[in-house]
Length: 334
Ligand code: SF4
Image 1 (cartoon, rainbow, N blue to C red):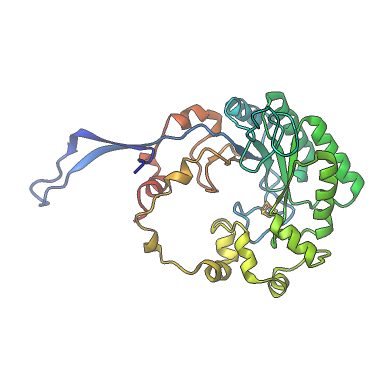
Image 2 (image 1 turned 90 degrees about the vertical axis):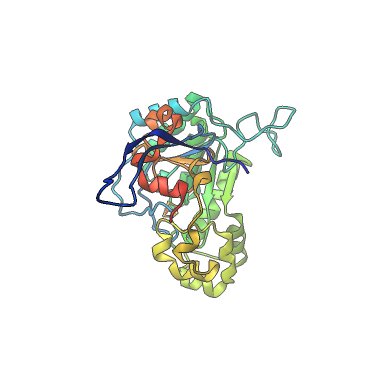
């Protein structure tokens, strides 16, 4: 069995023998250093803002219009990009040197788990910052770059096209359009359709619809405007929701308790004893870096492995001795 990337050292020296006389049996304390080795990231999302135009029930970062409008400073962005450059991998290319399916040049095809993307919150709440960031991604030559959005800003064709062209001219390779039964509660479907249509004119095949299942379902339903979730589950089979990547974290555990239980059953905390999150915590693909420079792997929102401005130190190994929550997740939650 492959060993997890955790090194446990036990010092040969016993540093305390306990109170031999008062507390039989003898209490022994061992010095122990536990280091979590972190590989350098190969694909990442940069969370430029936590503020969002809406408040999806399932949002893993609990984004909302109520967040303060903090955004990543240009200095921090610069340091982060410098630290990431050289490691980020684009969508693999065909042996003959062009991207699969659409003949785009090497490194310009986009894929959800490749390259570098700008995300939030909602990046289009501050288009100037997102545009500047797109320019910097190009300056560093990152492959497979895209911006993720819920389409709230696509109120007409002209504005939509204008912003997308500016992003393309800044060097961005594509866009990701979020579509699911939670986004549709606050974004009219016409705006999502518009972004997919105009986005395809501007970026060609480099428009990712996440998730396509819901985009087609809403089209089949002939949806116009927004749709409250209670109405959605009357119209669609509840098992449709198995197609959402519903991760029981962030806002979902508060706002979707009953639904999560219905879809996946209820499990007692003890059932997770003996499990380790080491794979998620050391996963190098699709990591996230937030406006406060937290380095978050897997889909582990809120669990920071350190300050990404010092990525070298994180990748040299995270000392778990003074991080009891991370240590428990790596070893055992018991
Ligand atoms: S649109 Fe995205 S970032 Fe905004 S609340 Fe929904 S899931 Fe979160």
